[in-house]
Image 1 (cartoon, rainbow, N blue to C red):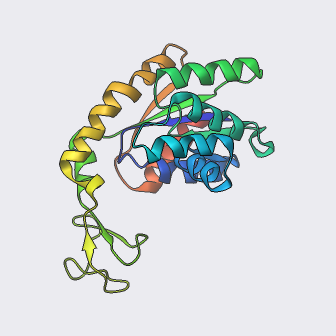
Image 2 (cartoon, rainbow, N blue to C red):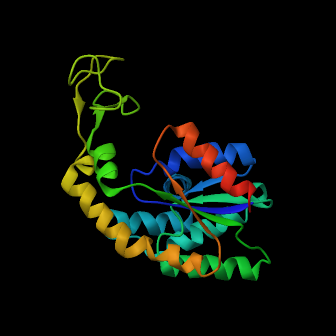
Length: 216
């Protein structure tokens, strides 16, 4: 299957993508992973991306598209893939359409993870990260530390990242609504979109997604 996963920040796309890709035995292709891999390997696209990032500029669509295209051409993606974070805007969606047409492939489904905006803010703004180890993640409401401000695992200080502050989250949501949300209508016109509630336990959301895909 060839699937695009969309949804606002805090919808749990990365978590769901990992579970779905494993269940479907297809590669999970995430934009962040593409950037890290290309930069660490020193590919021409990675070098271009790094130049823009060092200058504090947005990486142009053509660089992101090039990375995604190269990854989709790898042997493990021949039978399908799950795209997470790509396409991010209409230009990227049109480029993906063109690539699939050119290679005789088609998308099977676009899963739209739906979360109320207030819940997105609560999920992200409530995160607290350990300064000693960023893999130690807590949440002031959903998974609080036993002692406020102290990591249960190593005793390090817990803090709120700048990206997780409420005002930053709301700005990220504005960007999502203006740039990414329009791709949902783009794919609705192709009859590909299924909207799924991303509220509830991770396993419940995965089950909803798998049911939607089995109906395709």
